[in-house]
Length: 130
Image (cartoon, rainbow, N blue to C red):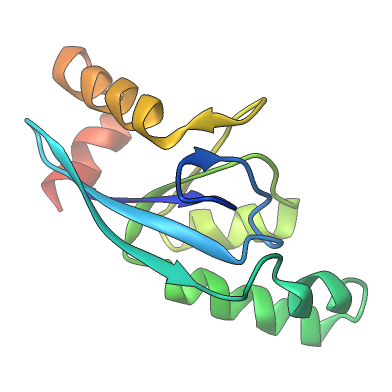
């Protein structure tokens, strides 16, 4: 199962989904996880999405493109996400996980793996088996 992280530094979950210029992607199996890749959308903040806010279809198309490029992930960790973007992720079968404050990606992956090993929720079991 692939997990994405909205990040500014590749170390911490510290960015809003739309604003994120970069996501790191990890692969998790029932026994371990490993870094796969960094997906770059912009250098720094994704200004195309930020500046298109309130423009209707243009903004929606940019969000759709980002969701599409992250569609192979089953979970995406982030600090914030707008309602319409969250709905788009969910429709693609992606669980957005909002963190209250920046947290390390390693800590997030360690917790996620422990949850899976202990008592995974049904959606996580399903995602791991796909």
